[in-house]
Image (tube, rainbow, N blue to C red):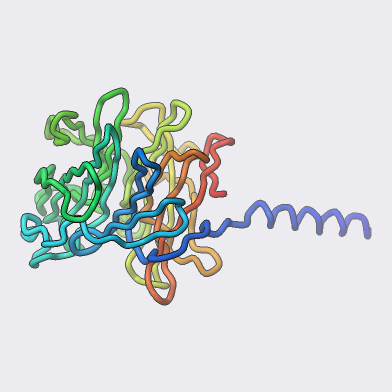
Length: 312
């Protein structure tokens, strides 16, 4: 009997260890961000862009110590005012891609609960404040649409460009882009994921390719409520960039499926607004989380050994 209880105790410890969630990796400096995106230039410098008036820029040489260096639009972005409803309003959820010596930054302009939303594109050869070229409106929505044009994410596959986007309403969509302009090549959209639970709370899509499979990461539930936030990161996968995506249980993401990647744990509340980056040490998950004093940068490595991403 004693041996049996000992074995049960060891088994319980093993299960607990397997369920333990790894905290964010060490970061220092100015890490008060929301909806971060990270890219790395050809010198090895890391760039983090995030939500805020003018879009905030931070840099790091080691992916640990971050410094705020300014804004993408230090003089405001008047062309977005019609979507934010105010002068120099907050711009949302940028998505950075660095290639061929150029930064490409997609970003959104809207207001909470509104479908009057627009996604824009900017380019820079240096990434520095004031160096950005406004390439203008990429796509937009109004209340007559059944989805919302925010939270853009650029995917490039075999030279073809795609943009995933969407928040609430009928969920996450995919658009084909013209690689020369970075703008839609048609008005068609493909459905990638949708929920009905919690008012359809799904957003912040990122499509990431690993070992010939495409992984669609999304944020579920509610952001922007401080320590009352319930954001959590989910994933599904597909053999095609345009889906269909299913979760680990085989449930289609268009039917509310989504395997949990990261949720609130310990003092880390509401992780979400994520991005992914391939780095020298493997796939990197970048996100924000909440504490009593604000939202902060979280960085973890991802292990795909099982075929599904695990935070390490």
